[in-house]
Image (cartoon, rainbow, N blue to C red; front, side, top):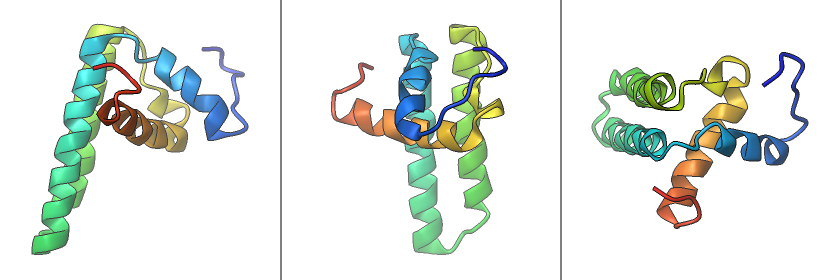
Length: 103
């Protein structure tokens, strides 16, 4: 990725995002982290335990970053494209659930 790389839409960003997640272990770690985040978010909504919200966010990123640093050997796109990367994680999670992206 060059420092000048820009994306004018999420649609143009998502193929790049998938390219940064070629390693199956990394994708699985992302899926696990996002799934745990979903469970924590639901628990917070149903119980009012609002301290779970930052924990959900933090642990979701923790799983993803382990995948990048130890298996992908790249820097997470979060550092340069935070919003699109956040959206990409949810899209990839959804695509994995639907069988569009392999585990």
